[in-house]
Image (cartoon, rainbow, N blue to C red; front, side, top):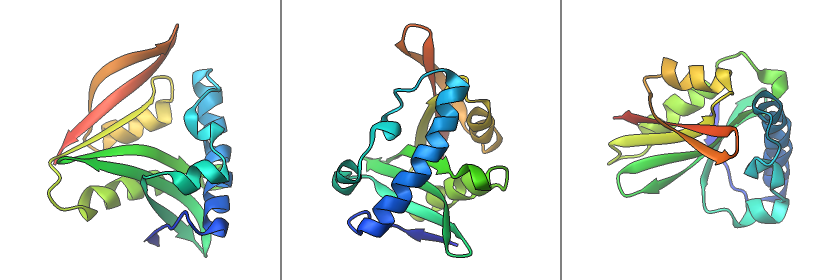
Length: 150
């Protein structure tokens, strides 16, 4: 089940923080970069975040999250994270597909991931996203940007 998350609720924010740290630690290992912004989050920074969050629940356990912002007619995905206990169950794809359809007046979706995060790169390619560019964030570390026209 997918439902909107209220990060002003401390229990929800705590669950999101724990999940994203567990998930983004795996990405950090894959790309060799440990300064990924979600790894630096705190309960306070999540509470102040202006992104829209949805969660994927399995047996009332938060298994995955996605967050985004709407900028004009573009849905800009900021976070996609699945707890490692729930990897390889299609949760990230379900979350991405869900938010592509939830907002009206969207004609493009954008997302970035670590270039070396092959599972995420494959997720976006499999779901119809096109690579637009690689962005060097520090020497030798790249993000790959994707977009999908809706």
